[in-house]
Length: 449
Ligand SMILES: *[C@@H]1O[C@H](CO)[C@@H](O)[C@H](O)[C@H]1NC(C)=O
Ligand SMILES: *[C@@H]1O[C@H](CO)[C@@H](O)[C@H](O)[C@H]1NC(C)=O
Ligand SMILES: *[C@@H]1O[C@H](CO)[C@@H](O)[C@H](O)[C@H]1NC(C)=O
Ligand SMILES: *[C@@H]1O[C@H](CO)[C@@H](O)[C@H](O)[C@H]1NC(C)=O
Ligand SMILES: *[C@@H]1O[C@H](CO)[C@@H](O)[C@H](O)[C@H]1NC(C)=O
Ligand SMILES: *[C@@H]1O[C@H](CO)[C@@H](O)[C@H](O)[C@H]1NC(C)=O
Ligand SMILES: *[C@@H]1O[C@H](CO)[C@@H](O)[C@H](O)[C@H]1NC(C)=O
Image 1 (cartoon, helix red, strand yellow):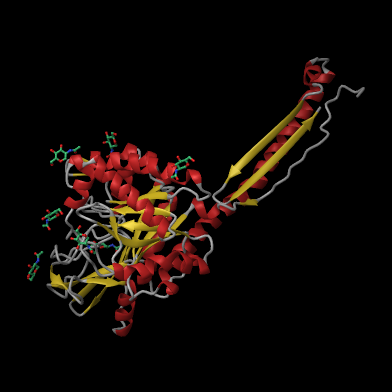
Image 2 (cartoon, rainbow, N blue to C red):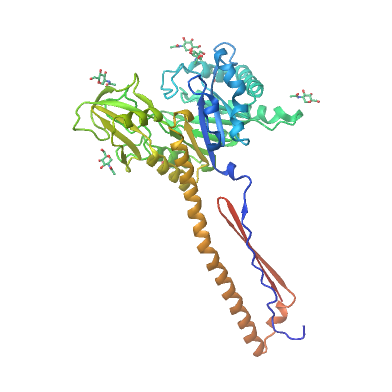
């Protein structure tokens, strides 16, 4: 190299979009399935989910071990194998819920005696009997994880003890497969839409450390059995109160629970009220109790059938993010495709881990699950579009910068500067990663001098 001119010998730009094999894990599409003969397991389109959560195992009030009702054993023992047929990479979890029997669409309400779990939490020996039994039963039935569905802690002591349970549960789950080729069981928990209520706050530090993720139960805010005004039971926003999902999610984040461990609940059910006055029929209109069913709860599938048979018009209110329809005196509030899409867009924007539907079999021909997936893809496409625009611009800037650099050096050289000696034989490797949800772009730019 006689000439002291700097040679820009090589400029490699190579772009390698790599599709994540772990893409599915970066966005959780979970769903609860309620064990019963009414919703056969083979009907579940498990290809639309990454995680399916089978419910519910109960807790014995004497031994604190899990109880699988004998009628449900057939479902539990075949669940994982059956849902794997349509989606070999599906992950199944067993959910624990200590309450009364309930209908599939509905809701778990608050008709629950919390004291069984409270007293389990209260004693270290009861906690370990609960933990051991949960691991044993999950393994026996071939589940890959355990979910605790307990929305009814009663006291501050419950919350402190819950933190201890999660510490011990995590330790047990981590050490359990040490002697085998099995992977560790996952641990998840369903939580209220807000981290604090009354004088109680969830044991957030322990949850962060010990849970794989938490399901925010972002529905059932208003029930026709309890309130005589029509309500958006799963409102994303509410201009008149804090009872809404956005408020709750922001509280969780503000309490330093990571977005990357928050999974947003989506209801596949709605509620029917009887209007007090057919002409006053918006959200928050006076009502006189339930309509259509005993507790007013209706699966999405049933709502769609019902509205089709009455040829009812389905409205969408974007300030609450809810759909509703009016049939005579019946006012039915629920999430249709619009509400679900808006919620997925919200979850993406807040960088949450994903969503979790309650319950999968209430969907109508998988319309809601398809809408959720479609919105997720649309979001991905938007990101990719941005990259496609961003990419050439970046390349042009880099090229211009190199040319400017080259000319500068040349200029300096003619002025007799020595700066180019310093640069001699030095090579630069500039590597830049643009990290998108589902793609990596690598630029490698080499300057050889
Ligand atoms: C709740 O459970 C506790 C412990 O099993 C029992 O002593 C109590 O009577 C129950 N309360 C109700 C209202 O069922
Ligand atoms: C679960 O167990 C509690 C007592 O621990 C009982 O009151 C409740 O009815 C049980 N629920 C179901 C669904 O069996
Ligand atoms: C267990 O419950 C009893 C009675 O409610 C209470 O006095 C005690 O402090 C609790 N112990 C723990 C470890 O929470
Ligand atoms: C694992 O193996 C060790 C020693 O081989 C044994 O002491 C321990 O009990 C085993 N643990 C389990 C969970 O089987
Ligand atoms: C967020 O948390 C901080 C303290 O951790 C508190 O001061 C603040 O009021 C909270 N913000 C909201 C909107 O709740
Ligand atoms: C949503 O409903 C509220 C209450 O009925 C009403 O005031 C508001 O105008 C509605 N917004 C939209 C966008 O429909
Ligand atoms: C709602 O109104 C109905 C009929 O007026 C009444 O029977 C019921 O007790 C009321 N429910 C509530 C929760 O106020």
